[in-house]
Image (tube, rainbow, N blue to C red; front, top):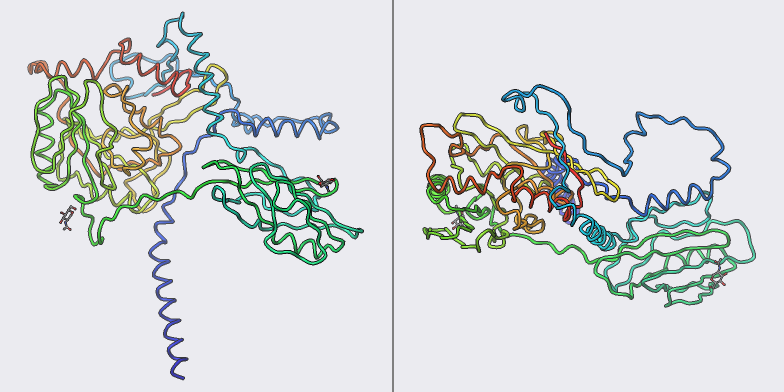
Length: 526
Ligand SMILES: *[C@@H]1O[C@H](CO)[C@@H](O)[C@H](O)[C@H]1NC(C)=O
Ligand SMILES: *[C@@H]1O[C@H](CO)[C@@H](O)[C@H](O)[C@H]1NC(C)=O
């Protein structure tokens, strides 16, 4: 009696805990939103599919078809072009009122004489990049109709040099004298974890194994114990296993990889977010020490103990000191990755921003803690009161030998459920909170130190899940130049580096990197 009551009590307790756990995890799941994966260039998949279709369907090709243009035009054609909007008025502010798309070729970053050699090298680098980034798991595999073979089509995984049981194998065949199936692997061996009477094995422990029996049931029983052992070490690849019987062949893929090693931060108990424990504020400065001091003072008003990391690449750096400040002097023209940051999150700010009561970092921390986003931007308020988030969507269209087309547009993909002020997008302004390890993975390209910032989001496309919230606002020290206020000398030097004219070396450097490093032929933006 007593023990019954105890069991009952335990059962009630367990279900309460389960319900609580479900309620707790429910909202988090609701936020998991659309990912921004891009299709990578022309893959083996398509070629394979084409071969298959032309090979087996020769009779079918005489049957006429009608193309449905509205759908067909959505398919990637692998021959993109960049086109801008033509015409339109050229008034002052017209870009602000009616943003038009402009198109920019990128190969102009190079002299015509060096372009051919450069194209060749880019193609070479691209090929080896493709080889590195593709595994047999990228190849499309079609399960033929009416195959008596039952097998797993996806989701098999083994750690390097380890063994798994291959689940789901079976043969469904009519009556016969005897039944035979063969297995062939490329990067490992096959075996059985248990033997079944009346079943003959050949080649067990090798990369080609034959299983034979006169009883179908015995054979199927045996197939429940087939194992795969990876023998050729590679930290991340895949093996293709062939599974065949008379006249029928199947292929399935086993991914070979280590589990992802987690990188967790112990941030203490969470009654309220402790920004000092969770966030490091990172900025770079270049000559503008007065602005930097204003930024530091404004941060200290609201976050007295948060660590501030300053990367300084001025030619003649001044010293900056104070509690919770780390000042790193960088070689001229370089800036560090955020390698100095040890907190879970890093807040990136420009050195001419000013914190106010609206700069609530807790809100940004909350978004990252409760969603699958890696990075979330805020808004910047200009001295005029104009506030903007500068959201950008980025997409890449596959091109042929000339390279791919890069398209950037103002805007976003969708609002984040539960955070009405926040949206999912691909690129944001220079005021964002990010998971430190994700920023480190993408990396800042030091060659773009001062000229650009959206390039970071282009590099991160497909691996960074980006959001933007308009209710966390930082102020911008005025950039609007009034004719009666003379620019200080250091401001002038700065402007020269920061806002290079279109024909300048800095813009050419940027275009050159987009052309070679990212293999783009052109870009459009509005
Ligand atoms: C299985 O493999 C053996 C040895 O390689 C071969 O002789 C046999 O024809 C194969 N059987 C089937 C059904 O593929
Ligand atoms: C917040 O974190 C900082 C740094 O880890 C720590 O010194 C401080 O005591 C924490 N504050 C609270 C209220 O827990």
